[in-house]
Length: 142
Image 1 (cartoon, helix red, strand yellow):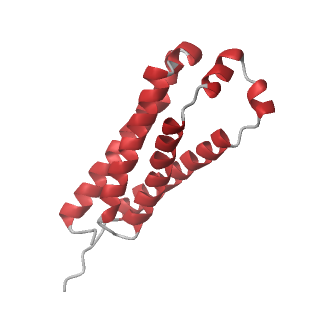
Image 2 (cartoon, one colour; image 1 turned 30 degrees about the vertical axis):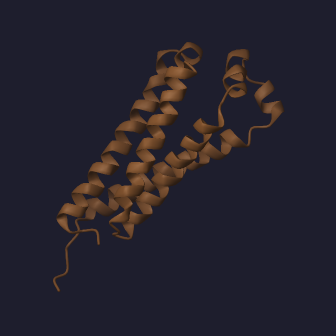
C-alpha cells in the first residue's frame, strides 16, 4: 500500500474554509436566537424580513452551514463522503439565497450590496465541492 502525499495547501485551504463555515454556524445561531426586543430595534423593513422568514428557508440555512462544517471536517479526515455533504450544503445555500434574494427581495431592503455576500458564499461552496471532487480523483480521500 502506497502512502498518498497530500500537499500542505490542501490542509491550509480546508482549515481556513472550516473556519469560514464555523462563522456561518455563528451567523445561524445569531439569526435563530434574536429576541423580540432585538428584532424590534431593527429598522421596520428588516423587521418585516424576520417576520416572514419561512421554516423551510431556516432549514436550508441550517443544512448549508452545518453541512459546510461537516464537509470540511470530512475533508480534514480525508473521507470521500465529504463530497456528498458539501454538495448537500451547496444545495442548502442555493435554496437559502433564492429565498433571500428572489422571494424576500433582500436587495430592496439592503441595496445592491446585499448580493455580495451571497455570491461569495456560493462561490466558496462551489469551490469546496470542486476541491472535494479533485481530492477524490487524486486519491486523497478514502
